Image (cartoon, rainbow, N blue to C red; front, top):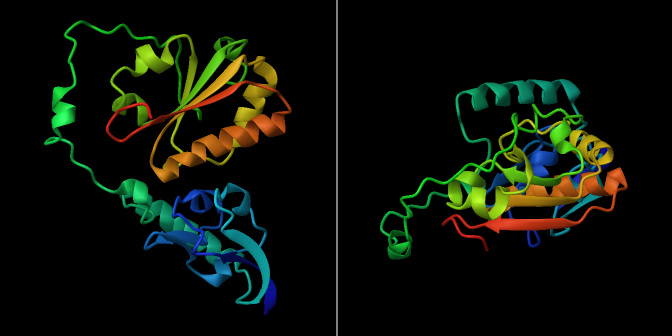
Length: 238
């Protein structure tokens, strides 16, 4: 049947995986570094993934494809849940590439301070799923929204980034992100936020965190100063 369907320009696709995260039906995967439709009947043709693509590689076209099958989608998503519970990797994302820095001389030469570093964390919880938008520490604050890996990658995370901020953390790749944008909109709308800093890793899939935050700021209608800090996989601020 001819219906709306997603078309992917592989020449433009950089394999970031943002569309995979945005596709609630699980119709997309990163295969050989490019986004691909895994099964025609999984794509509903609504194009929720398009706004998450940083390279404009996606568009909706009229195409003769299999009909959308809601039952097949539900079965596919259930099977994915089972596989993820076994800790399988859901897609061949370039951000999953292994790097070993043990023999890197620059890493070895980095100075090590033996003095204890005081934690700059001022509240709990910090995971976005658990944070209450009405929490007092989110009122009139400088808000840091950090990808989960950043604090483990950047040695001076507390001193250089966290100090003076209220913190929430999230992983745009592995978290169940349904409702994240709505919660962020709620936080921005209620909290009279003074500034927002997103700290994320340099890997492509981590761009999804920045995109979610920017979408939430725009939808909230608030004019909030925004800064993005990108941490390299070697633990430096880029």
